[in-house]
Length: 295
Image (cartoon, rainbow, N blue to C red; front, side):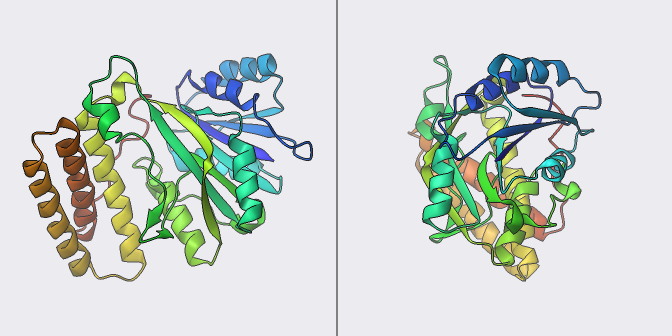
């Protein structure tokens, strides 16, 4: 099994690699870790090499410049040659049963792709509304009871199911390359599943501890989701009209729940998500956020 990690100027990758060394795997599975450094220069080489050595990991370091996450993800896919390929983010910590949980669900559901659970962890001094709203955790990839889209922060795939498909560099700076990747897999008939038994923790950094960061991320995600809907054949007019109605509804909910710091913020972030969908339907380009900072 190959576990793929894309990194960009984050010392936290060392903590992730330490958590991978603690995975409780069945005897039949061997794990190799592939780290793709997306910085202009190979800035993570020494950190990664030290983490491989200290934790006794079978690892491969790749320099995959520059500042386009799709380039790094594709470098991982090119290097991966095991039957199973997992992806996890460089700012996460894998719980000991993470990989075993993904493998168990892959076999139980006879799926080709399985997503796991991502739980945000907050600092003790975080504002009270933040853990109450829990807007940093990655929601399960369901829409109307069906898996719709997906993410690379916690996923296991059968390598043969991926085939020649690669992450689109056009989304490599705005994000959404994973959403469009898994949407393409779904359209091709690849069977997908989800398990809450494969858990990774994602510490929320100070740089992400603001409503502005959350609304920017929601808007960007909405733009990507809008592209997925348009690629599925929906008309721009329909997508824009439905999204506008949802934006208005969300702002109404925010106004009605001003008494609750968590609830009005949750509604506001949702409004930005639908605004992003509407922007895509109206021809607006996605925000470019990746590579601007390492937070």
